[in-house]
Amino acid sequence: MRNPGYGRRVRIAGYNIMSGGFDGYETTSPVPQRLPEVKLAVQELGADVVGLVDTFRWDEIFTTDEICEHFGYRYAFCVNLGDDRLTELGHNNGLTLLSNVELEDVRSVRIATRNAISARVRGGLRLVLVYLDDLSEDVRVSQVKALAPEIDSSVPTVVVGDLNSFKASDLPDLSGVYESAPVLAGALAPIVADMQRGEVAELLESLGLQDASPAGRPTFPTQLFPIKLDEPVLRLDYCFHTASATVRDFSVPNSEIFQKASDHLPVVFDVV
Image (cartoon, rainbow, N blue to C red; front, side, top):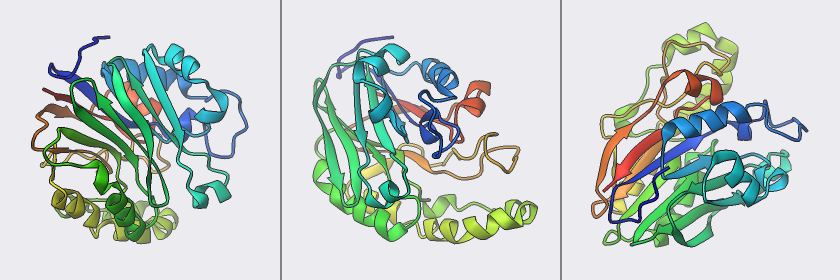
């Protein structure tokens, strides 16, 4: 892995790894069943900094030293989301930041109902890792409003993670999906309809952030999803950044290992 300080090119990735690599949220296994695949996927990203989303139970089963050893990174910071709604369901979800770049001011940030991670890459770049609520756009909007103090348009800043919301320009046509799986569609349709309000992206843009991939690249689902699709159809995972942070070479990798490691595809980009 490279080890630059900011001021040179830094490769950053955001990746929802689906229940921490476990087969589900009900498992009591001491080790994530998909950990080997997740490790290979992270290795293939080749990023200097990786924000892992949905690291279910990792704060219980791993020390930060063990996380570093598993993934071959110098630094790791792991937090529980601390979301009461999820805790009541037994979903000990979390966020984990991996880095080979020296970080400063690494901390948990409370965004309304749950935690995010904020860190400063040496030299001034602010990185914020988020995993927004999966059920309600109203809750997601409240979370972004609470995140606002971390965002200063004059400071190079990137916000990366699973927003669980769409931009107005990214509204998908899911009619074929709903027809092929009507039972699942009945559960998904109201959640997707709420995501289609698109207020999260509008609010982020009002805070001085811009989308690193205005054309939009779907990141969900992969072949691990119960409905088998030829390609991803929903864009849930994003990078937003201030104008003072120059983002290049944004991509959504979709090789075989990413189809096996999670139901989401990662996003990866360079900050120069």
